[in-house]
Structures are given as structure tokens and as C-alpha cells.
Length: 114
Length: 113
Image 1 (cartoon, chains in turn green, purple):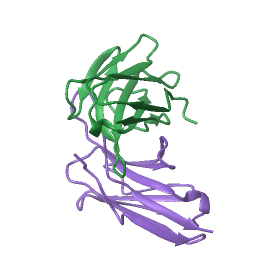
Image 2: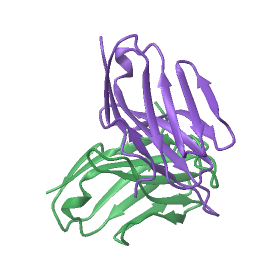
Image 3: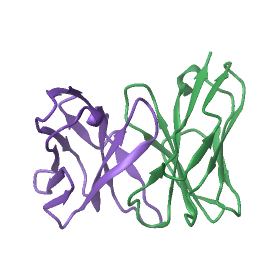
């Protein structure tokens, strides 16, 4: 167990809907990153949050957005869901902003878009 | 985009045998890490090797890094059925104010009892 918790574990949505995924960081970690893992692929970096601000973004459209709260927990929001958004969404926390060393991952949220 | 490319894509061995997995990458890196994932769950960090290191050990794990060839290998010795999982290499490249990991597609390891 890494101490990073994500909710919900599974979610089913229909195309066009909006979804919010939640993540609680490991204690003492102030940096949160979100990754998308499609079936049979490796995780793809979505974005990173530090001190409640987005601090780096991967190749994902603006309908993917996030928040980080003062207690370092985080949310991932996806608007106008598309079928290709079906994936495992992973949250990872770390204690360093400038180094992605030993990320601690949650168990993920499996999102299915029908 | 995927930075790391693991090889082979799938590996099946008998319990007690050694498992060797390879990873190649394209750009300069700060470090390379290996992660394990069980059945589509979260990833667990296994080992990290920095760009100025050539070999590291951790328990039954041995990782090597050849920056001239942009490649790494992960060796799991005396494999166990519990080692059955997907293994990913991930590279970290410092981009200024932040950092991210770029993962390969992974290797599926099956260890037969």
C-alpha cells in the first residue's frame, strides 16, 4: 500500500458527460501528477499540480483539468467525455517538484465511457 | 508519446528461473525507473538508476543502464509465481520547473509454478 487513495474505483459514463476523479496524496507529499493508462499501454502524463497550481501538462486537451487543495488532495475533471477517454486514471504523489523520483501511485479509477 | 520501449512484450518462465527485461529510450534522461503493475492496478516503484550509474541492486533485482546505447535491463533472479505482473520502464527528463515520467508499453511476465 502506498498511502495514495483514489475514488471511485470504477465509473461508467456516457459520451458527452462530465466526470470528476479524486485523489488523496501520501502524507507529506505536496506534488500530485495524473496519468492516463489505456488498455495495453503504459501510463501517459496528463498534468502535475504543486501548491494548488498546474505545473506541467502533457499532450491532453483543455477539457482535461484539475485542482489541488490546501491539504494536497487533488481532482481530475474531464468534460465532454469521448469514447477514447475510457482508461485507467492513475494519481501519483511525490515530495519533490523538480524530480520525478519514486512516485507513489494510487490504485486508479477505471473509467468506462459508453 | 512513449519514450521507453520494452522488450520482449511478453515473457513466460518457470519458477526459479531468471527473468531479463530490456528497455530502450530515445532522449537524454536524468534517471530510469522500473515499476510493476498487478492486474491493471496501481504501479509500484521497484528500482531507480541515475544517468551517472551503470548498475544497481535491490534484493533479487538488478538493473543496468547504458546511456551510450540508451538502454536498460532489469534482471529478476530466482523468480517466483508472485512476480507475475506487468513491468514498465519509465524515464525522467528534467524539463526546467517540473518533471514527469515517460513510460513504455510494458512487459507482461508470467512465472509458472
